[in-house]
Image (cartoon, rainbow, N blue to C red):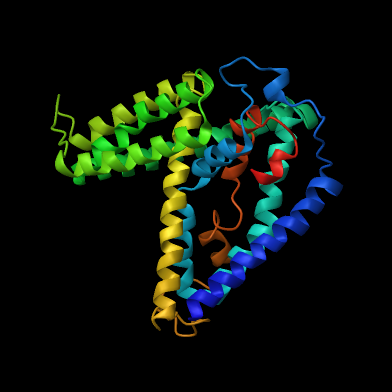
Length: 330
């Protein structure tokens, strides 16, 4: 029951913060206006600048930032106890993380959807632009390298996952075509696409795809090469053709998983199980564990505040938001 109470309190707190502090930021600090000209409309080119519904942008933005960080960080940070981790994630995301992400999105939108590097050059100087560019380049290089190796390893060790993952591409492209070219109903098209995703899981479980070695390159190396080629195509195709719809349908997979987790917590709590396993504050730390301050705030980053989010907020998302007030929802 403790887990259920904690989940309900945090969930209610987030809702209250969104409708109070969030609206205060939108109206009084950032002055979001529905009649303001946005880059997706002013610079619309059908490739990068395309106005989209806020629900679709939310899915795209959510999937772009919802990586392993929000999972691994808290899982490690709980070593100091669940209370410091929960307090940091809860208050940090409301008072810092959400403000940072919203600010980055609004600033980029009011500068023609340009990156943080270009904005730095405009408001500071060209030297700072170069520094920002170098930091962003190295950060993305690290992220691509890590995720490339991780995903390649998953494909090599779990061949049943290959077909479901790669069949997302035609499903996403079909969704994008149906919505943007055929003006299909978004809800119906989304339902069909999500159901198709789960069908591919059943197909993949029956048809594992094993990658062999070639030219002296092991399977993981070949998968990394294939993934890099995919990234090149995905970044050059019109955003509504692959990138946006794929992120959107992946977001629905995350929503379903989160709903099942919540349901599991509720059912287990009602049946009298699922106590909090970790202590509220761990006073008996293993040898070699660093102090809570300041390491907790480095360990749990993406769950509370992450500078990487500003790359997404000043990358693809500001080029697709169709009205300034949608920024708060995103």
